[in-house]
Length: 115
Image (cartoon, rainbow, N blue to C red; front, side):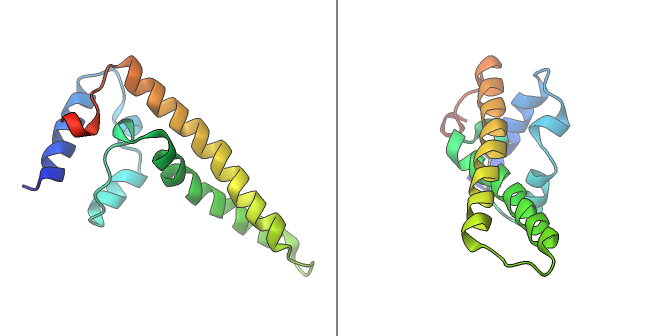
């Protein structure tokens, strides 16, 4: 068992003992990434800004796809598209990150490096 796997199992065991639901401490994105071999900690153990990117970027690119579908034959504005991705990533990712960091603090979870 690698150091990452040991820490991940310890983190998940800690999270199971809290009142946090499994869907919350292991949202679908994370088990998917783990199956792909990506060594990303559970969301409660990730810092604010990395979590903004992990959770916000996919949502931002979905917004970009919707923006592009809505355009039809109209001109594509790369500046507006970039602003849309950044704005959606910042707001959605920031909100999710705020939630996870607050939840980790309320449940007195240790830092990832301390597991």
